[in-house]
Length: 283
Image 1 (cartoon, rainbow, N blue to C red):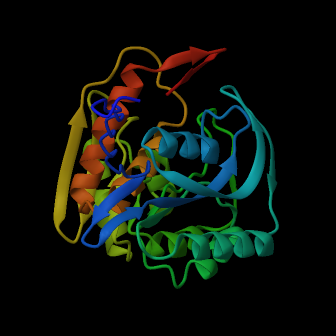
Image 2: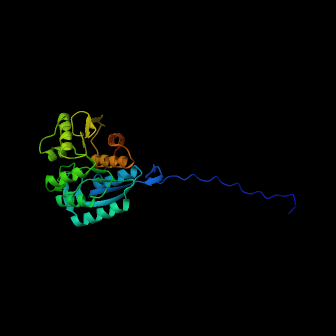
Image 3: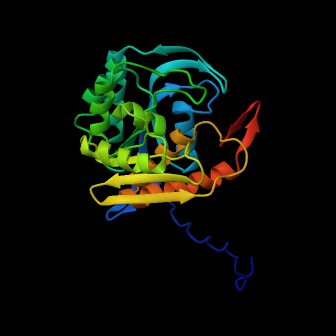
C-alpha cells in the first residue's frame, strides 16, 4: 500500500435517543411505568367486561394485569350464564396483582364483582393499596341480564373505598333505592351518593333523553359534562371503557375533573369510529 494512501473509515452513526416504553410517564426521577389492575368479569365476545378494559388500556398504551371475578356467557341479546370465581381465589389473585404493580404509576379499575362475597374479597385485598381506584358498579348487562347476586351494602362498602364511582342511571337508582330518570334526578343522586361516603361520583347520563350529560360530584363540587350523541346504536362496553380510561388518566397524575374530561373526550371519538362486528357495534 502506498505510504500516502489512507483508508476511509465508516462514519459513526449518531446515537439513537432513548425513548420511553409504551405506558411510561415522566416523573421527577425519570420514567415510571404505568400499570393498571383490571378487576371484572369476562365477556367472551370482548364487547364489555374485563376484556374491554384490557383493550382500552392497550389502546392508551398502558400495560395491565387482569383479575377475573366471573366467567359469563352473553352477547348483545342476553346473559345466559354467570359463573362466579371462588372469593378466596379472587382475593389471592388481586393481592398478587397489586404486589406486582407497586405503588408508583398504578391504578385499579373494578367492574363486575358478581357476588357480595367477591366484593368483600376485593375490599380486603385492596385495603393497603394507595393508588387511585375507579369502580364501575356493574349490576346488569346491556341486554338486561343480571350480573350481580348479593346485597346493596357489599357494593356500597366497595364504592366507599374507590376514588371514583361511575354508576349509570339504573345503577345509581339501585344504590339509592329510588328512581333516577332525569338530569335533575342524576344531579341529586350524585350528591346523595357522595354524602354516603363516596369520594367522587360520576353519574353517567347516557340513558337520558337529549344530550348525554354526565354529572361529576366530589369535594370540589359539581361539574356537568355534556356531548352530542353519535348517530346509530350505542356500542357495548362504553361504561367499561370510560372507567378504564379515567383510571389511566388518574394513574398519569391528572386531577379527577381533568381525568374524567379527557377520558370522556377520548370515548366520544371511539364511539364515532365504532365498527360493527356481527350484530354488535364495538369500540
